[in-house]
Length: 327
Ligand code: NAP
Image (cartoon, rainbow, N blue to C red):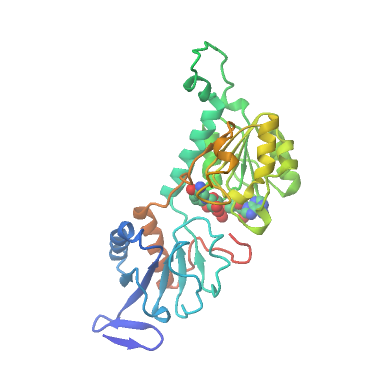
């Protein structure tokens, strides 16, 4: 082995770079990721020293990252070609000091499947009024039929990788879905609005609103009292996006008044949701503990390695985050 000054260690004789990859995504995740990452690297023909330890940040080619892991400042990672985030959301990373390297977020078919299943499942729960029959201690025979899907408009706030997949799955069941995003979008067979007028219009007719927006300075408290009041009385909110998208006090007030019929929330301003938070005890709130869509080691490892392969081949990285925009 010898070390080329600008490229790092090479395998002597094979003229093949051995990359240094630092798994800075928490020691607890390492046992689940070590084998799938090594398999994906081998399948891609990439030789690498992959480790959950880092003695010399200036020798690291790629960082595999998750918030709460080992890095609070990227300044010493002078040679790092990309930071590869295991999560779809990046709000805890974009403001970390020294982050000038390209940041790629997780877009992974298994994560998307998980989100589609969570969103469709919880939409159907509310659409069909399942709770009335599951929790019926007085054995009341109420033969009221729910409407069919085509009579239940849904607003999908956020039409990115996850929002569009969820919108398409709901459409396939017959729900009229209106999307809303930051920029104008033309999607085949799927109306998508933008801007304040678009948001008012999407919420104004939605019996269910699904929040799949990132947490950025622009989306803080997006669902506030004024916007909740735009929705038809008794509408349902599903939030698998991020906690700060909702003004918690406004939501509680809207639930108390009956303006909002139910809120199913997967994400919160503080996680775990504090024991004293009113969401836990409110009869109109279902709390799920940030389980809507988990990154799966097998498929995520292939996504990570594909980006390393692209970096080494001089190709543009996939799923790049715009640090200034915050997502
Ligand atoms: P994405 O592909 O980046 O899409 C984000 C969408 O939000 C885009 O359509 C974007 O609009 C829109 N948006 C951003 N800022 C906006 C604004 N100010 N006004 C209106 N629209 C705005 O993200 P994704 O992969 O779909 O993921 C969405 C979020 O889901 C993540 O950021 C994360 O917070 C959350 N998530 C939660 C879980 C969980 O387990 N609960 C798991 C994974 C992800 P443009 O299309 O115009 O850019």
